[in-house]
Amino acid sequence: MKKTPKSLRLHIGIFGRTNVGKSSFLNMAAGQDVAITSPVAGTTTDVVEKPMELMPIGPVVFLDTAGLDDRSVLSEARMKKTRKIFDRADVIVLLTEADNWGSYEGQVLEEAVKRQTPFITVINKIDLKAPTAEFINKIKEKAERVICCSSVDWPNRDKYVNALKKEVLDVCPDEFLNPPPLIADLLPAGGLAVMIVPIDLQAPKGRLILPQVQTIRDALDNDAATLVVKEREYGHLLRKLKEPPDIVVCDSQVVLKMVADTPKEVKCTTFSILFSRYKGDLIEAAKGAAAINSLKPKDKILIAEACSHHAIEDDIGRVKIPRWLRQYIGGDIQIDVYSGRDYPENLQEYKLVIHCGGCMITRREMLFRIEKSKEAGVAITNYGVAVSVLQGVVHRTLSPFPAALDAFNRAEERFKKGL
Image (cartoon, rainbow, N blue to C red; front, side):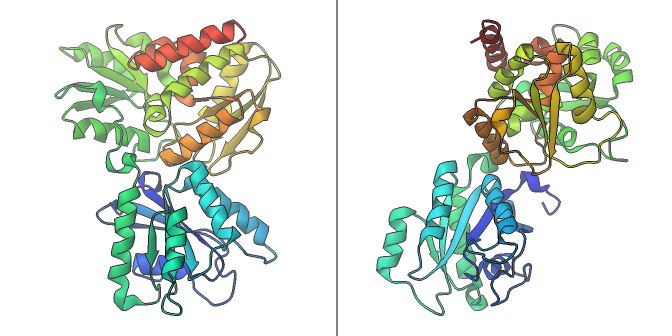
């Protein structure tokens, strides 16, 4: 579990005023000096990330933020990064002190309520001042879960950390305790999945990329078998099989060849489409993909990549999808590309958002991005569904997901009618 990617960990955001003891609390939770602590206000100048194991929950990452009341020269830049943590956090932990609850604390609670993010209040520094029963009850009226601790009282560390574990376990989102399947529900026990994995310049040497590895593991965990093959050898492999596979999954870049080579009675889809369901909302992605048929020259499109890799000459998001879009609509369009944690505030300017599979961000962050697009009235889809539309095979790649295919067909009809 020490090698679990950050995107698969429970993200716990630590918020509070300057010098409330956020970094000391992180150090206590981690059991080591992770963050620099000092009585000087504004010591934490950037978000400190600490991946660790918080058993019995499992892999987590703590996000220690700058103080909410930071008034230093760089405070606005720091606050901008702190506010972005609200989008990432699966659980919000707010540190305060005895008898100290004001507008800053209220703002954090308001953001948590708005996002429906589980919220835990930690009254810190009880070694200096113990909170009154009246203050504790006042907080419980606003937010149910309250812990009292002293983050410098290491002899009692186990008591405080165990209290934190209990509260986190109680509010831990279901997807971390019972994650949705990637492919297991599409395969019978003892079934076979063929996975077509192109080996291009972006494929890390000696390794497969994360979505491919996760899909293979999900099949194996559910007593199914996998065959991994490159696109050039796929047709030859099929001819060698005595029985057809239960499902075929490919990289979106070779979806046209995969569909052409796969017998019609065999289910097929792409890794990106699987991740659209696993990390986001496949129904919304299917609805959003139908908007491609309503695009016109000069429309503005957002390409969103969760990772920040170095783009190669024929990059799927920056080169291939833009090229296929221009060919599909028969004219030029304006395309903006945002990568990593960057995500624009001006979503209403775009006609469509095309997002990657999201393997490098949490499900909560992907769902939040989908909600932001819906609030702005902008259609959002994902690479795999969009490429399938552009290649004319979307009805085939969505066929394993009847509800998503129905959503696409209904949305397509609405767009045709101009609704």
